[in-house]
Image (cartoon, rainbow, N blue to C red):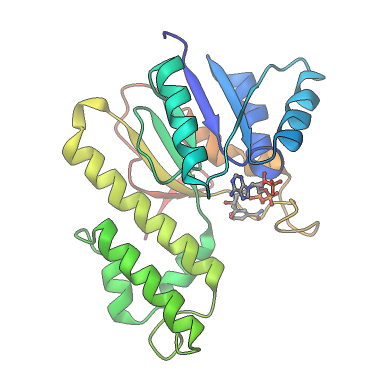
Length: 239
Ligand SMILES: NC(=O)c1ccc[n+]([C@@H]2O[C@H](COP(=O)([O-])OP(=O)(O)OC[C@H]3O[C@@H](n4cnc5c(N)ncnc54)[C@H](OP(=O)(O)O)[C@@H]3O)[C@@H](O)[C@H]2O)c1
């Protein structure tokens, strides 16, 4: 169980694929490409193999708790855990954790009411309160009341706002409850990247979009910062 291991969720294409590509070249250990669809995932692995790279594959659908548990058990048994996890916000492992959020989370924050902004910036918000607020947004949006209740008019932005705030909460818990494990957990924005999600007019290539997530994944041992931050262009941003 001595091999180091990195896992990138949703990495059969787009930024995740570019992150796997960069980690295969720069990470001293096994790199797992994962996808919810085995066919798409193994095709992506094969395309990297034609470049002489050697990623491994594990199926993972982050919306399916059984699939998440199966991956957790696999990595625990085979490697004793994960050294680097890119994208999965739900489970804290020993190692580097990078949540690919978006600058849209900051825009969404700035367009919230001052009461909501204060909660999302606070150092005492809990995961339970965050989940309650996210559920409130969904209910109020379904009734068409979300803007008058102080929410911005963007589901994507609020989901990324939730991810950035969750990253801050988890980072605070790690520092308090497991300081000796020296786990660094951050949220980041990859920039505006030419993928199926953002389309062909975006300014960055997938490899350029992978730069900040890979930088956070490969922070050297012993450093204590950044942790619990929102990072863009390798720089900590004011939340
Ligand atoms: N592109 C941008 O400009 C930009 C900007 C800011 C933030 N981001 C963030 O960067 C991340 C990657 O985006 P991208 O632009 O690379 O998008 P993309 O090209 O659409 O790729 C998204 C990846 O996520 C996978 N995925 C979706 N649902 C999944 C699930 N339930 N379980 C496992 N995998 C799942 C997709 O797999 P399938 O092929 O099976 O659908 C695909 O591999 C996202 O979190 C996005 O919000 C992107």
